Image 1 (cartoon, rainbow, N blue to C red):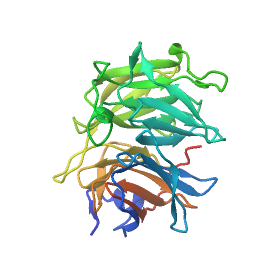
Image 2: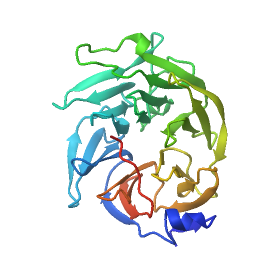
Image 3: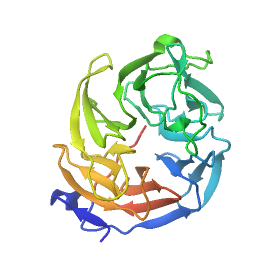
Length: 305
């Protein structure tokens, strides 16, 4: 079997088992999968390859951006524009309709960001991203000294990086929390009242209350991501029923809204990230080391715009 069922509710969310299909291979290290439900394609990153690719439902894969500045996490904003974390430049950028780039964030308090990693957009248009130091390490980025003395999580105010200005105002970027070891994946609860952020090195997920002004408070450990195989928390998302999926030991771990780990989907390679896609949003696309995989689940995911 390709799954470990830890609690019976797993069957209704994922199934009794899954068939894993490799739909792309031969990459260096895949990440940042995001589904475009309007144009019906998948964008994903290959960090060490310094390239972003587009996967089409007919199975074809083409270059989407090269060089990519060692892009990692991707999402779409509410206008359907791709927002990307770049390891090599320590930037968050937005791709405009003409494919030009607008820089949304590159520094905090006069110091260069570490290496923006993963990213989400709230319904009001504000952008939240994690900033660990992985992109300053060999292979996954460009080795260089870190300017900030912490690894933080940030919020970009709505409409930051307006086309009339190349660089957002310093006040557009707010530091939300700075006490993580290595913050990585993040996602909102369905009603956006809570923000989940995982810590790769501590192998757990924290949850924060989202305040009316978009800041976060009352952080506490929500769940540990455990297993006897290789892997740690990285990509993380919520499905349409509020179940939380996160990469971890062996593959993808599935948690219910009450923080119970329902089970694990085991992958042939270490999973870094994933997203739902397809016409019914029940196809789970997984970026795992040198390959791109697809499997079917029973509960649909959510559109990002």
